[in-house]
Length: 93
Image (cartoon, rainbow, N blue to C red; front, side):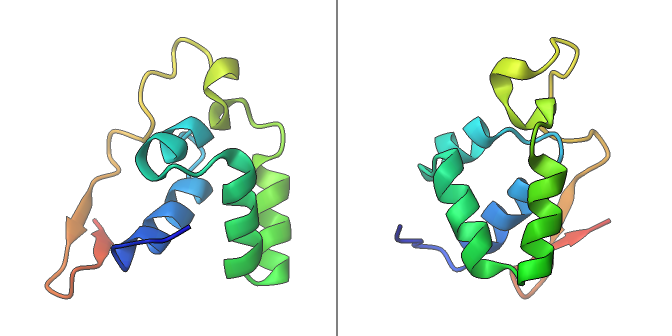
């Protein structure tokens, strides 16, 4: 996988950690399937962080579009808006 923008890797990791962002959204935006995201997370995270992430996402219905309830209409929380700082990185409000 070739990331053209330096912020892509950070954004993919952030999306993978988000409970309401399905793997299908990451595939649509970045062309990475679920197995690719798992491999990326294994490579980029510390071993303990990867284990925590896998336990958190394994079996979580909101991480898989086909398993989601119809009431989950958004891929992120309404209050989750990101503001870009002057250095180009996303900051949380």
